[in-house]
Image 1 (cartoon, one colour):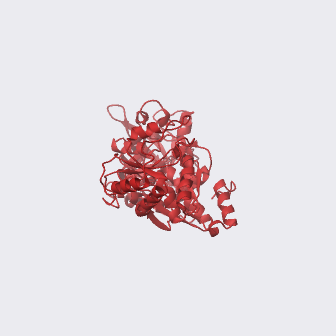
Image 2 (cartoon, helix red, strand yellow):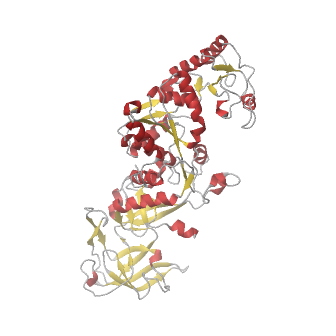
Image 3 (tube, helix red, strand yellow):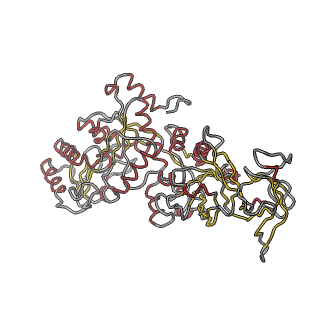
Length: 553
């Protein structure tokens, strides 16, 4: 995965295990998302790591949905997660759900009760929190801690049978209320939730906590390397305690630093707020950091995998500059995107000496960076659209585009010289006039003229009107979650600029999502999922250069 940098610590651990024949030299990882939202760019690192490490060592990866919290989980999220993983280029060996194991997890809990290692507690959530103590002071025992095995078994079965209301009772492990690890202070194993589950319906009204479901699920599947982010490091001793006491397959957990990206938020709770409160137009809004949003914006799976590789695997948390992600997609799109003509702010250019009614089909290369990309033909006529900022009435000293008396080359076409322009009553330039040099045709230039400027254009008679959406950072500060007040106060009001009357070359009429284009001189673009032949819509993926960093300087 990271040959240029040498093996990372996880590769070293797995290589040593394989060499020593641990688990028979077998490698089985898992990716265990909770289906309570869409996956984001941070998850992509975990996906690439779990699937990539397994592939590297000849193993495989399970996809297991951690669906133990029915109030927040939906089948929609399950399907989106599967689509994202496949889009990134990975396929799982088995598809499992924590809910598959509900009967076995219940049996595990009964085994702990019989061993005197779990009890039913009638205390409220606030009372249990108070009993926990603090990191520097020991907790206090629950008054229900010494219930008999028989009483606990009876109460736990009645909990399963739905005889108690939500929050009336919980099942707790009996470990050590004075442990320096707060997770060992009689953690909750089961809580009552009379809520329908997206897969099991109303079969269950008690649901296991993450710490009780996760390690045992790994053990049931005989996962050899359970790779988690660093926030689960303090949970590892409890993970191992359950496996030891239940005498299960000895799955082992390893932790790495999660991916944090600046100018966004990565909390599913906060992303859900953005969606539900209408700050964005859904989970796949191209300003969101979700994988589905990045796909819609025009990011390629290769660019995201490359980004995950460049970020690397570390043991310490850090914040990655979103500019690196943009660099990766820019680098990838440069090799694959078709170069096309698109005028975002159109200004009419009339070539006075071009034969009336004549249309030429001019050849232009699809991508000089891609071998075998080929060429296509684009129509050229006497009336064109050029970018409004490619003309200046009173040009600055280093302005090498079109101006009165100045010459410029039209990309893949001819050299033209501006002969005049027209304005409306408000002083706005509405039309530019020019003369072309017939001998200056690109590829056959016999004019001997030398011009410094080259601008793009589209034929007015053949142009396709289109909507173009220019996206920027969703937040105007690097770490909105650490700022004072509500993180939503720092949303960038200019994160979306919509152009409703761009003019595109006709080859783009049938463009569809999943096709990548470079709008010459403007950036990389992709058709939006809402785009149709009747109403084309394009999203800017990223600019040609990193204008953001320059702007901050």
